[in-house]
Length: 204
Image (tube, rainbow, N blue to C red; front, side):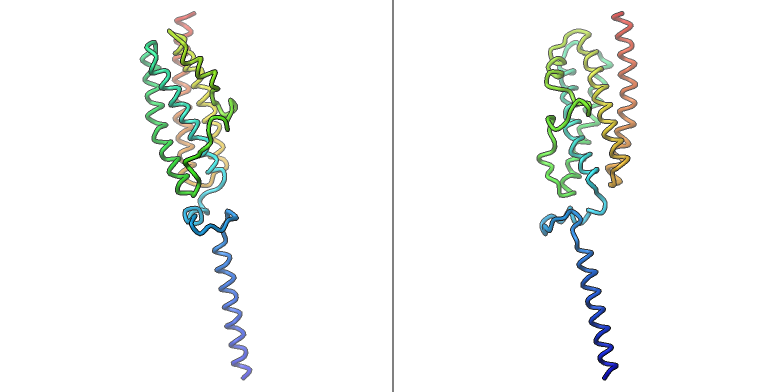
């Protein structure tokens, strides 16, 4: 009889342990209990807040770089070297925006309402409305100089944001993209600096 009682106690203890373990494994690390948000709970271990912030901030940042490039390309005074650079920026950053939006959707974040320009500042390399208006109204060699100066600042902001992701992010794909952004935009800054030097020599 005592043997049966001991067996029952052990079985009960094992059951309680299993229930407790199951409850712990089902804990939502986001602090919410939303059964419809399966994408967040399924990959939460691979994503942290730095990853989400990187994607949310880089989307409008890239969008503005494309806007600046379009302004330059619409200007008849755009130099061939500068126009080529603007096309390369658009070709690289357009697909990256799609990738970032896709990640936000996978992560259960509302990608239809990412941060807009107002959520960022010149510290992030963002141009103000006045800066964009100045670029749009520039003519002659001035439009090339202004585009290059603004885009260098813009790229420096993106590199700082990407480095923040490399240092603090958790998602491997997002970190890899951030590293690629750093390498690409550092190279583009060097190219833009070289073109600016040529412009200075010509106007000087």
